[in-house]
Image (cartoon, rainbow, N blue to C red; front, top):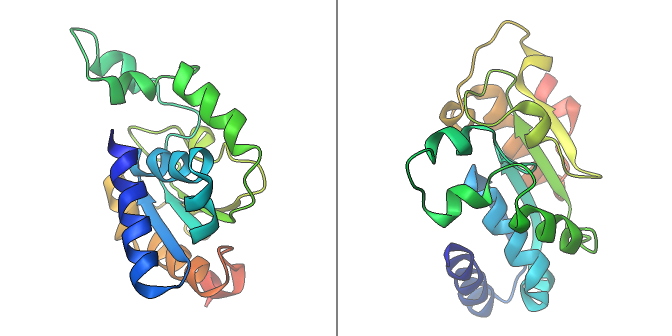
Length: 167
């Protein structure tokens, strides 16, 4: 259901502007953005890039713990190996939308290998630039290195550049 809202907004904005849209998404929003591109061909044509911040691209083990006593479908869908993630990965294989992943090695919700589990994505790991920096799942959006990775991807056609982050 949530992905349908993303689809609707992409269509509305691109209808108004006549320009392709860059999507910046965080956490579950990364999966929704990927699904909008993978499962709606007209949306794929209207999305120029995805900047994926802390997305559980290969799922998160935290979903099982959060769902121990009952769960909403969106959390079950974020479980590693879920039917949704399997279908998304298969459909995503056909996508040509460039992606930059921003991740932290100290994410308490999404393992760093899950965030980076997108073939051909440009990966920005916050600790590559500041090894001892501890950045939580939510703080990736406001961390100066994470933010620079987002801005660099937007400025460079969907692929963050090391020179931008280094500067």
